Length: 494
Image (cartoon, rainbow, N blue to C red; front, side, top):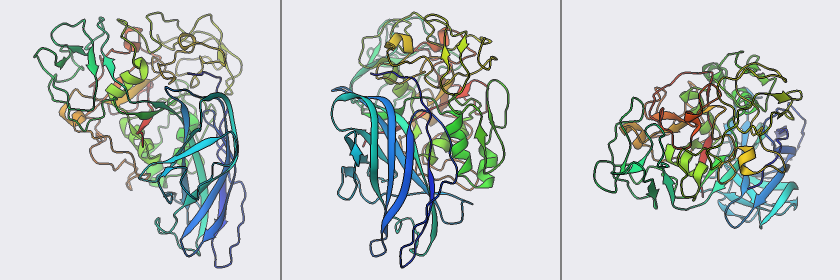
């Protein structure tokens, strides 16, 4: 795992005209900032009217990337296009799936693999070999199958390229529950001090039979019944998780590619507790784009996930990302021990380079009113505790390098604590929403949030909620926009 200070990300958006004699005119429409990827120099060429394809080309860079024999970071890249001057945007379908498929080009610079899933809704870019350091690669080329998307060769097309930093969580057995005193934590029945080993994606029996998964009865722990079906993503099989919470800049970008009706449904509209998204459609912006986005309802999170062709995580995947393959430490936090230090002091202007300056701080919890920076109470910049030299404990990172899993904002996850949650099959988003601005993927918990819950604690909760195995709100159906509610998305590995 490598940690690093977040840099800003810029998305470049270009306009192209398809005609019988290809004429390409490209200019910068706008730029938005979030997390640390930098996408630039987007262009489109090699339009094949016969095959109804075109090549989307761009440069990419990000800092302190890594790949080891265990895992790696990656960028999830997807393309949106508009054929009506930006009044609405659609998700582009790529031409072929596989790794380094013919016709796609990894460009020049840092050697990368292009991995396109079978649904062809985007691609992962990752280092092609073990190594660490900054990524800088130019002239990457994806083939867009515009014919499949129903675009005709005489259309006027606008294109936006988006990138989200992800972390690969490999296939491996892992434990849920720590054997500690966390509320409603999982254990292997009958001894509450025995963590439960998940060693496959097979169904999991739940109940009061020796060796079954079980958990104490609490208000929001769940119904303590099962089984958890084989189709429910348990975290054993490999998946990718967003390295950070959805940022305010990312969420503003999302709003600006919806229809006006969809955006009105998904715009939180708050200006307190360090939430900075403001404006009107289609020009929403965040004055602190790198800050984790609070006030996300369950419907908001699902809509973002569907739009980005990602999906919600499950609470079992949450524990896998925190603990990895380690033997549990009772009452541990995401960074693997029981020591936690509260962030209290912000150093620097909050422009994406600010840090926390009080010694040893690695978590945002306890309703602190910050000194320095913008002050106030609320979420911090995504990944603020990580530097280029910080350890897992100093940076507050999970086992594989995912940040901010303990504290900052509650992570919305699909629960095993009721039948609706257990019906989740892990389908990835399809890139589009229904006309009302809601996700439209089968077996996802709907806008009522029945089947969803909260894990990991937040800036306004105490230390106990930040523990990896705390399930005090794991089946808490809380559909609305709370000042401490955020989220992140995952995608099943191709």
